[in-house]
Each structure stands twice: as C-alpha cells, then as structure tokens.
Length: 311
Image (cartoon, rainbow, N blue to C red; front, top):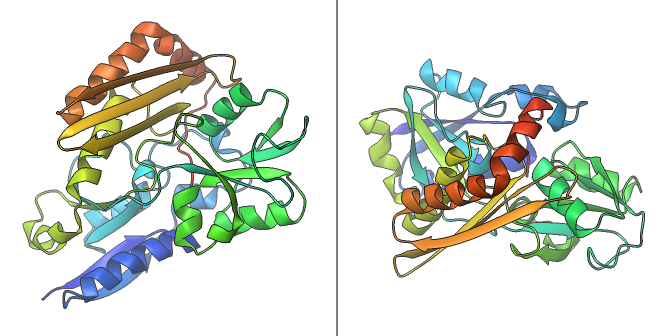
C-alpha cells in the first residue's frame, strides 16, 4: 500500500472532491493526506472572470506542487483543466460523471421561464451568459463570483432573482433542495467536462498511476475526451461561450455542441455520431468553424475574454 498526497484547491467543493477521492483510496488500504493549494483563480475574487486572462488559473499552482514532488496527484473539476496539459503531466483517470447539466436556482421562481421580464440573474461563465441572453434577452445578466455557498448566500440576500450553477457542484455539497429546475442540454449546453473529476499526475509516474486505475470510468473518459477534442479543435480553453455534451451507448458516441456570441444574438449548434472520441470531437468542431464559429471566437479573443468558468 502507498502513502498518497492529494493536491487540491481550498474551496468547499474542491475539498469535497479531494475527500471523496481520499476515501476511495483509503478503502483500498492506502494512507492519504490532502494538501490545500491556493491558485490564481482563488486569489482573484473581486473581478469578473471574463476580465481575467490567465490560462490554467485554477490548476497552475497545483501543477507546480506536483512537479516539485510536494503532492502525488491532483483532483480537478475536469472543466477547469486545459485541454493541453503542460509537459510533464498526464490525466491518468477520469472519474464517473455526476450530473453534467446546469441548474436554475431561485427563491421565488420555479423555472427560468417563470422569471418576470427584467429579472436579475447571476452566472459565473460566458457560456451560460451567452445562452441565457439567447433564451431570455429580456433578463439582466450579471457576473457572479465565489464558491457555491457564497453564490447561494448572495441569492438569499436578494442580490439576484435567480442564479445558474452546475448541478454537479450543488448536488455534491448536499444542496439539491436549492435547485428549482434542471436545464436540459438542448436548453443550455453544458461546459466541456462538466460534472466529471480528472486525476492528474506527473507524466509516466507508474508507481502512482498503478494505484489510481480503478478510479477511471471508461464511458466518462470517452465522452469527455470527445468534448475536449472539440474544444481543442476550436482553439479555445475552457474560457469562451462553447458548450459540448457527449453521451455514449454501446460504443457509439453522440456529441452536441454550440458556440455563441456573448450577447446571445447568435448560437451555432452542431452534432454528430461516431465511435472514436477524438475524431468525433474534431469533426463536430470543424463543422462549427465552417458555420462561423471561428469569427465568433476571434471577436471574443480580441475583446480579451479568456478565462475558465467555475461550477
């Protein structure tokens, strides 16, 4: 048995994820400790994510600790992990996915459609903002920073009429009671990798990798590889109005994806089927580019909006 050190962000959700992995490893007889590491994204809390331009802002410091041998593995929300890992690292396991969809949360309204005109809604991501503006151009959409509890407190304090969060994070923290409506992928296409946890290690560290293989879920691995291949084809990080959701059934994958203007005036949607995750993701990505996604993304990058979203 091994002694394994997990690197994790310090938010309540990140620690839930790290402790979840710790419990699974302990169940296999390993001893585990969790090292809390503050990332760039955790330090920048007063500025909208769309105004910050740091690639890997939720992973860089954790990877530095990995490289220095201070930790043996990192537990990430997969959607925070760039599609191109820095040299020296690898994604050794992708864990079984929690609900990948987004959730509408409100004190007074049972659904997104029930919000009156000019209601105030909060979200942390350009992807959600763009799709919200397309769905409900009459709403006032504002940035919403902070961890899940902080965002729920802001809602309770009356700062917003409703907020959108990743269903997975809300469920993992035991706050499913707060959810008023689950937004289906056809309504709001989820973020790449949303709901999945990725385990990152030093590249070719077979000693650690051998203890983590049981954490990998083949279906989740294939579907998220497909989504991440699409994102890579589009040239984006996890930071622009791109949604992607892949499902698998008996070896065949189905991928639906979208690219949207930030103001919601145009949402381009494509889908495809195939058996090879990377080829399917790349093919659907190329379809989106051919239909105008390249110009949308160029406009976004010129505006300087290049940051990952949070749950």
